Amino acid sequence: MLAEIARGLWLTLKHSWRSRVTVQYPDEREEMPKGYRGLHKLLRWEDGLERCVGCKLCSAACPVDCIFVESAENDPARPTSKGERYASVYEINELRCIFCGYCEEACPVGAIVLGNEYEFCQDHRDKFLYAKRDLLVRRTEDYPELKARYDEKRLLTYV
Image 1: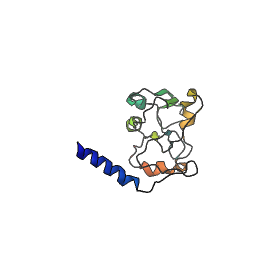
Image 2: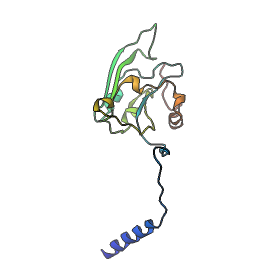
Image 3: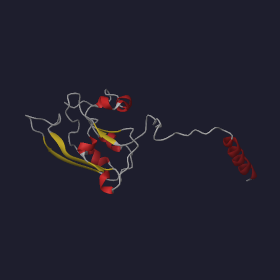
Image 4: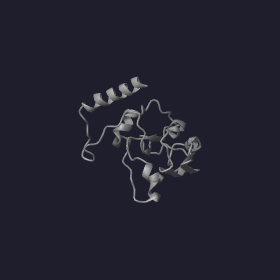
């Protein structure tokens, strides 16, 4: 027992002489590790069509049931996605989400990914319900961390 106390005191003394690193947030932002899971993003194909085909597999894989997807038939004249269906409603309750990543693993077309964004705060609980317009990215090139993290060849191509 005394050996454990001595070892704990030695560890405390050893760390007390080290220099401290302080990040001057919000002027300096910390670089998140490659595997960090932050806010959700819905990706598009290169031609601008939505990747999400409304299969609801992400909703089924979610252990806390924070994802709601409603599908609709795709118009062949003006398609929204490359599939027969698309997600007409896509909502995520970020207060319930545990950021486990099961949704992105379940997605067959790589439509939903977890980005590096860790700054999200609101003044009311209702604002944490993110709709499709909040999650959908315009261009993947605007998010270089997504291109670095997700290899396009690993994502399945849905045609």
